[in-house]
Length: 399
Image (cartoon, rainbow, N blue to C red; front, top):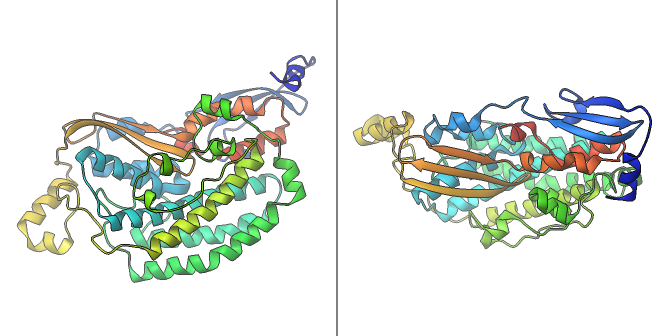
């Protein structure tokens, strides 16, 4: 224990209790920290979670596989498409389905746009919690453009239900390419303005450097993944360590920090936004020809024209919609690099129409346990920006 923390533990005097949450605006979600404080210094923190627990895993055990996708939307709703497509890849792993290369590249475009959107929300909110609102308004215009792209693909913006087991429900439209090219053209200038506002801003740096640090060893012990782990100096990314969706075809850097503090977490996400933007451009420029879905009639809905005019297509449509397709027995785990780290799906099938067991590995739930240690001895204002920089999403915390 550091000398500063020993001094905090030895402080005498009357302690005060402060409820940080569950409805406090600084918590960015419905969860609570009961802080024991000596003046402005945090002596101890006790977490309370479960305010929006929705029993997703139990619900999933009573749903056919294609109807589980909307449940994943409600995990990290700042980057829903990554959750959706991660689930589809898990089922494809179970049924041993290989998707066309075009589907892989289409998924990369969508997932990296979602990662950009997620990181823009996190970093702009860190700025807001230090008193800087301007950057927030700048980048949210770009997030709206990303949502417009999602809407063109699937008709939804926030909770997307995007894609299907085996690929996508339709190919990218002409309008999609127009919206994506418009985003690619305008984003670098706006993001550079956002970076110029904050990255070397002395006030912002003073507020963030040294706030909520965690060492690489402690982060590993807690099970950190994603930007929070990389900010502590550990070079680990699921896209590189266990490539999926043809990520091995692309060259991209994995930014890492050194101190594991709020500023490092901010800067790691800043650099990841640039790498994701490069991935989107590369995937678009090299988008292969071919089908936008695999040949899996037991899981992929046939075209409506076939349903109206072909009895076999009508039968498949009915069986899929009504959840009457059996799947192989088996046990699989698949993970993707979500906005907050390793988002995994542990799936056990007993050969029936619903999963026997499904567990969501939510990165937020795992790294949030370190929060009391990270803020002990800190000022209350530091605890707020630390929570923002960890990007704890209540929907992912309470599945």
